[in-house]
Image (tube, rainbow, N blue to C red; front, side, top):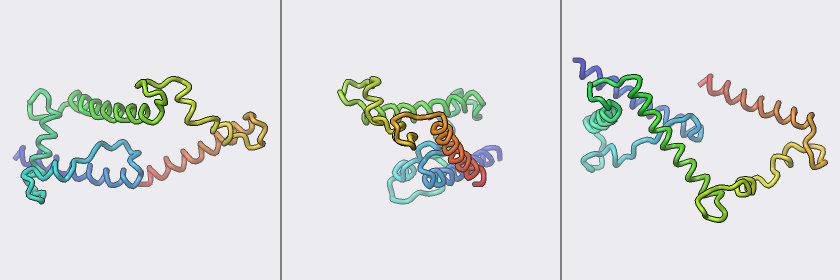
Length: 161
């Protein structure tokens, strides 16, 4: 009975994760969701169909991967370790992407010049509403207020979902 409840709970978590993935995709992945398994990963026997048994096996494998001490339960520390590892993978991919985009001299590192090249004074141009080549306190405050309103709107929309 315990195992049936565990598997049902895991199924619910995967389904909720799938729904979260769909929402994250609609929001351009900015909700912190991880990678979804591919069809091929879920179709364990490669017959072109995903069965309930294959989903259960996939969920069990994910659970077993998180249950590092093998006691049949996932502790807070195990959850933190799993989440930290997944987060580290995303950070590594983002760092690789940044270096790929900005590393002009292809040395595998970013110096301040390479980091600044992409913007080329774009912030000054956006904020300098009077065109004098500098940002006044009023222009700074106006941009900050505009950004704050945009951020607050996004936050309200997220909370309404």
